Every structure is written in structure tokens, then in C-alpha cells.
Length: 365
Image (cartoon, rainbow, N blue to C red):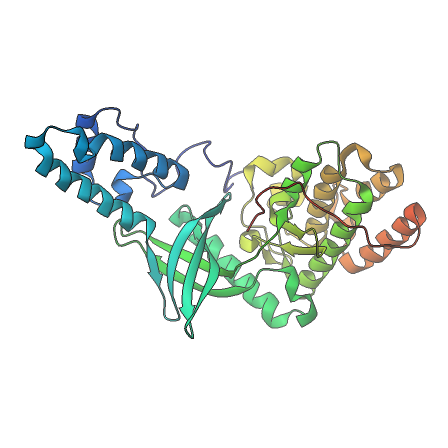
């Protein structure tokens, strides 16, 4: 798959197609006036990153404020300042209208490899509701957004209802044309999730490795999620730390970012380049993906989560799940779950509930 990597670390590498370069922030009033005069749309003036846009707006507001100019220039300065604020309001109060809803966009909640997740709200039956809008960074990734929508619809339609909690709920998927740039993007609207953390955040909070007894319930639920998906004929294709969310108090788990999913026996359409070393050979070699592909990725994710705290017998178990030869790895996630339970029973005895908490911090979406 070396020819079609997608994603990467935000902020590194080349600009995505369709994005404007970000100019240096003006440092003087004449430079600020010139930047404002050249801007026809909010995107011409403000960068896509919300935090950077806020900083630039504050700087421009200081430089262009009417109180900073002599009285004879006040009227012109007031007009320029009003135009600045109009552009800012247009950027921060964007609405997206579909056949079903009108969404008011809020701040960026998280920024991933392919897309940004933005908080959104909409009215229904006189009540304000919240959602998440997943918007691709580049139009070249519209196909992956469509792939995610198909996968989530398939899981909801064909998967056992009791396991639907293991994937996000797709509310709708639609195309949106930016009125300023004319660029059309595929947007997925997902139900809002509160209090969830990615396994990447869990790993960052436990730098010495997570206690395997805590990792056990995450591992068990992940195998259930994979078994559920595989029974519908899907391979997730990117079971990476950023794509596995857990809810500490409820011991819940959700497998997100189905943009890389594919049918059993087809190729994974793209990989996350910064995680290339985590993929099994059939993905990097552009060969068909199977249930064993997801099991390999999940095992690498759990091994990294526990780190040096992994018991020897568990290391051996993980090695069997990450063998280079796809045919030699386990293929049945639910059967593997039964084998994992036997291993956990030998190591720790009968299962008991272990409360799990994360350090105080802002949770993910």
C-alpha cells in the first residue's frame, strides 16, 4: 500500500489538496489593513485551525480598532473594523443545511488524520440537540467518508442490535458545498459522545504501562466489537490507539473511524502513515484483508498499552495474534475472547470489577 497512504500527523507534511496556505500574521496596522482588503471570504483571512484563527482575530482586532487611529481617520477605521467582525462572525457561526436538519457549527472537538470533528447543534421538536460533524480535511478523502457511512449503516442494519453500542451512531451523511470556495465535501453526522477517551490518551496517562487487569476489560470488549463487525462481513482496517475509545466509569468501548473499513477479502483502502509499522504485511503489501488483519492491529494496540507490564504468558498470547503470516493468526475474535478469558483466569483468578479512572482532563468527543 505504499502508493496510497492517507493521513499523517496534523501540522506535518504537505498541505492537503484544496486548502489555502496560511500567511504570516500581520504585525503592523498597514499589513493588517492590506490583509483585510485582500480577503473576500473568511477563509481568505482566517486559517482553518480554530485556535490559530482566534489568535489572528485578536491580533487584527487590536491593530484595526478605531480607537488606535487619529480622529480624522476614525470613520474609515470603523468601517474596516466592522468588515473584520463581519468576516469573523461568518466564520464562527457557519450553518450547514441538509434535507433533515440545519446544523450550527461549534468549535473543533478533535482533529484526526483525515478529518476534523466539530461540535454542532440543531433544533428538533422545539428542543436544541447536539451532534458531531465529521468533515474531511481534503476533498480527495470524500471517498473514505462515504466508506465510513456505508460501514456504519451496514453495522446498524446487519449487526446484532445488542452490540450496536460498539460503533458510533450515524445520524446522516451528506454533501456540503462551501459557499465561499465552492469545494464540496462529504460530511458524516454522528451522535454526540460524552466522557470518552482514546487508548492513545490512556497510554499517555500511564507512561509506565497500563495494569493488564485494567487492559483486560478493554481487550475483551474490543474483541466483541471486532467479532460483531466480522459477522457482518466487514474488516475495520485501522484498529489503532486513536480509533478505540473507552468510557472509564461505564467500562464502555466504541470502535471509531470506519473510513478505512473494507469487505472481508478486499484490500484496506488506505493506511495511517505514522502507524505504518503497526500494520500486518497483508495491508502494506496490498493483499486481501481478513478477520486476522483486525486481530493483528488490535493486539499491537493492546501490547503498546500495557508495555513492559505485560506478563510473559500474555506476551506469548499476543505473539500468536501478530504472526507475519495471515493464515497462521486467529480469525475468530469471539473464539479468541474465550481463549483470552482462560488466560486471564489462570493469571488473576475469577473476574472482578475494577474501577478505572483517568486523570482529570478534558475528555474526548
